[in-house]
Amino acid sequence: MVKLMLFPKKYISLHPKSRTMGVMNVQFDKVKALNALLYVACRVQRKDFHKIFKIIYFADRQHLAEWGKPITGDTYIAMDAGPVPSKMYDMLKIVRGDSYLPDTEGLGAFFKVENWMYVQPLVDADMNKLSKNERNALDDSIAKYAGLSYDEIKEKSHDIAWRSTARDFSIKWEDIAREAGLDSEEMACIKEFSDLETGLS
Image 1 (cartoon, helix red, strand yellow):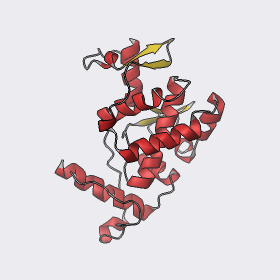
Image 2 (cartoon, one colour):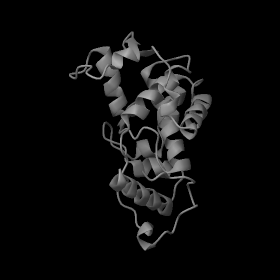
Image 3 (cartoon, one colour):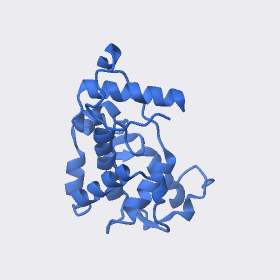
Image 4 (tube, one colour):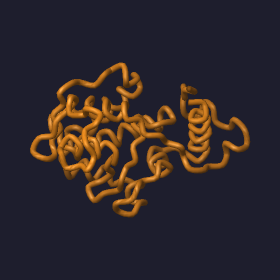
């Protein structure tokens, strides 16, 4: 599998097709998502869904800007309270017991949900499943946002990517990338490498 090593600007202008931007090929990584969720839940005082989701969103956005790919690759939905990672939300609902899906993967061994919206981790994240750069992005996001109130972090998450999306629709990763400060050439380069990585996996 091809790894994006030093992003951005180190490998832009590979050839002419990198100048055009299509849809970014971002893949959900269930193992990364579970361990990011556990990592954050074990390190914040207020462990409600909203706080954890927003911290992971900002970490995904930062890691995309710095390394050319998000940590989790989840699909973020533009809900009233800000971006919500749909597949991580499904994981929590499965454990909470209000999902139509059974817990066939044993998620209940990793965490439980208390009072409908608070994550109680039963184990810490597996550090072998998160790279140093991914942990750094999560740590940065925790440091910046864990102490904010519900309203403060909600306001921070109502960024251009969220505002550019109709409520309850998926936020495009291109919009998240622009919010992270990437330009068209950098996003085209991400797409090219992610397409190559997918083709070789």
